[in-house]
Image 1 (cartoon, rainbow, N blue to C red):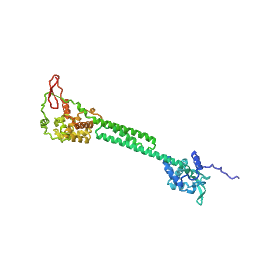
Image 2: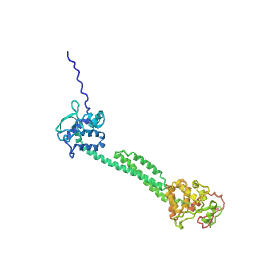
Image 3: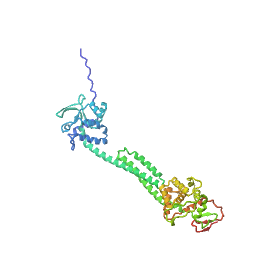
Image 4: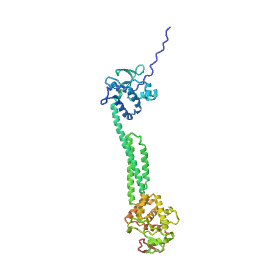
Length: 432
């Protein structure tokens, strides 16, 4: 009777061959000993550590560090092969992971051409050393690490250069955003309408938020270029706005200095007389002394109650129905804040003009339509008033006369009236 013979099974568990396996085997043949300038195999591992982030091998570092613990310097001499043969169980214990994960790491390291497999017929890793030398071994050949040392160095230099460029570009992006923040803060301090700057600042912050993890210098340069454009546009806008603010306030010059009245006022009327006429509302307090020369200070014949009637927005800030100049000055400070006039600027007006005249200036500004102002806004208008006050060319009395004329009812055709000049020099016959 013939013995039963089972058919021989095909060999199972062979490593799947790829082109990178062949390239790794070629690297083993190219390298003979350690590369020039390298005296210890640990220097190869150090080069891989630095180049791994730029080559995409960062996840393979723990495996390579574990494999290098089984190699010795004499294994890298010419004519020798630095082969290591730890099992998956040993590597799993060294790495603190499963054996299945070790298998995946080994396959990835071979694909990355960091090591070349040298498999025996039984697919087991083993070897024999005698006097520190490897007699024979089956496992992983680490010679590709020596063959790729120059490539690692080039990757380190290129990667560090790109990182320095990215770091410099991020600093420039931060500087551009900070410039826009400073521009917006200065515009707000100067009382400018900074809506455009705020929009650009928001766009810049969104752009910078996307640059934190960007490591491509080309893409980063494109984004930073947009930030440069925003910062340059912001600077140009701010310079033009400040220039407009310096030129603002000149619109008071077109106020007609002639008041149309039914009966001519007394040419000898003075500021003291006007203050006495307002006695029903209480005696007017003495205004805060101004820093202007006496010859440049202009009288303004208006009572506190009349100023409230002429400037309705000022009345909305009052807390009493019978205000005096102290109440009006407090209300003017509130009104200045409502019109986005900086506190520093309003304080400068009080110092230069006195509290009463500063309140009158703010009241006059509040009567202007929103479209009357340029980019500088109400703050720039007040700044222009202060500049003209220093030059002795500010005439708030003319503005008050203009407000009175705007509120006076129109006269019927043919009525005879007289025109009075606010400088008190006399009256002229009006045109019928």
